Image (cartoon, rainbow, N blue to C red; front, side, top):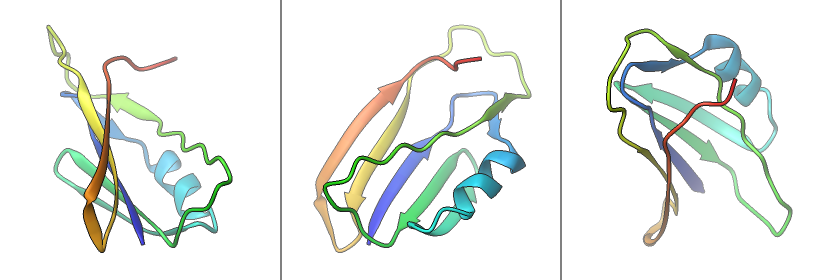
Length: 91
């Protein structure tokens, strides 16, 4: 099982529509939202490219917004952790 752990930017939440679209993908086993982190559990990954889009909604205006992290790792072997950062939200 693979986990995609998305830390949300300060002042943002994930929209219910975005969550619904993720849950309808066959590769997604489960989604958890805890505080400011979204956990997307995937059954497995293969060599095929996958794209996940999250629609965020700004609920609080925050100045000097800091980048947030996206972590991807195997549930059973978290040592192979991959980390990326994002700092902006597309329209």
